[in-house]
Length: 352
Image (cartoon, rainbow, N blue to C red; front, side, top):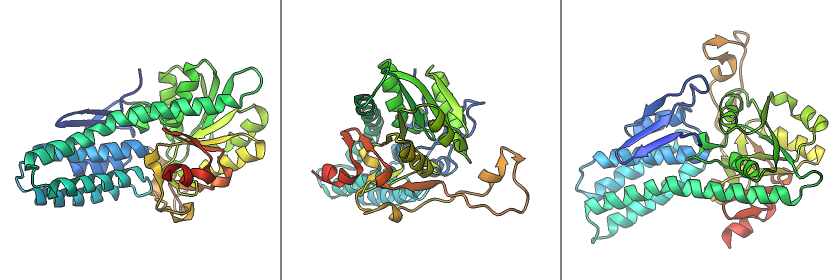
């Protein structure tokens, strides 16, 4: 059974506090937009799809309690709160695109004289709630397409060894996973020999979260530190690298967790296919290239401390970008719910 990172029913939202994993399992109640912004910004919930879903559901929780009878006021409140939620973590594009779609819906419902305030609210909340099921369906399709693409070029004994970076499973989505969804599909097909996951410094999402999910799912896996990737590819045959994405530009350049770029370079040198698994909502066609992606910078403390224990020399300055951008030229294919696309042809496929 997959881990449940988001618990929702009408009027009630709880998220699994990922800051406490793997040592504690505790759910945090989200009672409105302010709570939604905080759990996203503090990384109690993380992963581009999950950020979008939790942010929008936090608005649904607030709307459920709202007895406003003026559609124009509701529309204004919705727009302001969605834009506020987008500011919690600016690199991930999913919440930005979801906010734009929901603002458009609010504009349409507000302008329609045949729609009552109660119907406005009901239809709007229903649209947000549908994001949960759609995300799982999309992730399962990503898993299937990714599995097929990796196995198509398989040589030798028919078993694959996969390397992944950061966390892209149930904890980062509504319940199945993007890159980890591909790994799930390979495991289900009995073609997965082993998974290697990086620790993903400085926040250790790989060591804390991906390793936790792999153990939970009983998938054969080994944890490595980030600096071991070159040695791993040199000494053990890796069939493919599969990572997630927080934003993909129109030309296929991809922003993902810091450390992804160097893994892509090493994979290219060793002739290992490098795949990005992401839903279409992670693709930002408004950006022509990756150098236009805004990269979030995180607090120094994430580098200098583990929990309450300081590990860095006092007084040292830190640079802590949360993401880096992998050029499209290093990416074999981008796995979406509609298929696997060469990055250089991404805009051609998405726009047709």
